[in-house]
Image 1 (cartoon, rainbow, N blue to C red):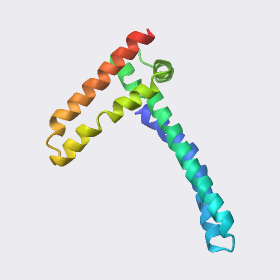
Image 2 (image 1 turned 120 degrees about the vertical axis):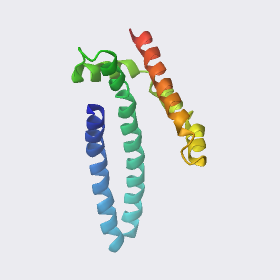
Image 3 (image 1 turned 90 degrees about the horizontal axis):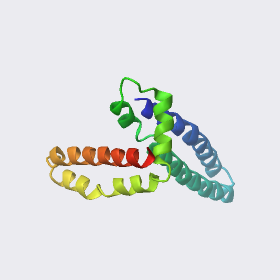
Length: 141
């Protein structure tokens, strides 16, 4: 739960300024400043791309918090598991992203079968993430 809270706070910190730029751009579209509007639209698009990349970096940094708490529930502290998750994923965020991309075909299969395939796919994905945690834990230990 705290993982989602931290990600939500980062989203607010990043998306809110980008939304303000979008509001300014919309104000210039109505007025006489079409060139300024085009420049602000390009800035807005680039800012959204950077915001998405930054937020997903945080998602992957915090991705191991759940497994850390599940691994040692009696001694798990939020701040400690957050720091440990960031340390564990340092240098491995790209591999975790590629792991997520590898499940696109399985997700499409689940959609094509109207969700029936998800009965087998979701446990497979969860087991894969748990094995990724075990690999990161053994590497970073």
